Length: 311
Image 1 (cartoon, helix red, strand yellow):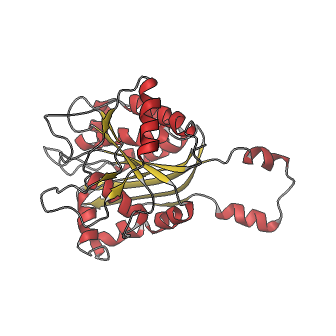
Image 2: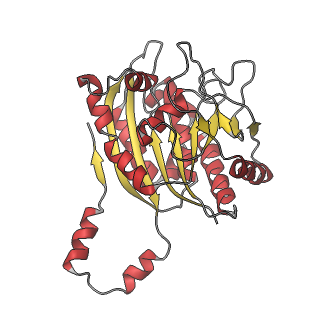
Image 3: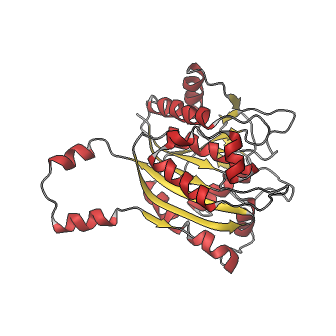
């Protein structure tokens, strides 16, 4: 049986991709951003997922105002890199997992979530930048990727509650897939930022930290945030954080936060990142039966405490 083992969130600032592509990651402006993801790449290398589901929003690459799907699932065998105006990014072509994607589509649609199925689709920085942050810059991405594009650009976007429930439906779909696969779900976009208008450059770190806290401890509270509340507190583009709730809905109710990173600014955006792992079933019960841990076990347990990096 396939299972979702963890979820991660990451901003997908296009300038981060430009810094990678132009070898500027060690410059003082960018150094802190990329140092914050070093531990994440180590975690990903140890986790070694068989498949990643990446929730992101398209930036007029695969879609346009002529066609705006609320949820679009990539079911193709591969996804070319889009030309966003300065040529495609120099990153590997994204290989898909058509079998699992088709299974998810059937399960989710029969659970009454309408998806647009994309057997041909280009992907842009919304998807490739988070892959770079978590995998580095390999010659090939180390596992298949299933893209899930969400409309958070043209009104009306889906609500946080709808996204959270879609995540639950994806969890059910993955767990009914017969092949033994370890799956990691990405939620991308955000955090607080606004790129135009009178509030251009807005960053609300207090709200961002509260949202990260809520992802771990009380995601249902976040599902009650309206679009207007998200835009008021986190800027016009802060509504992208509803995509993080798809990731959170796909996880178990109780999770372990193993890493968090937050910094400002990157371009005009707050960079937020979190790694949440599903708890190993039965581990808590086994721990309750055990006697006092030996000193080495105590030390090991202490090392497992969440590690956070904040600005």
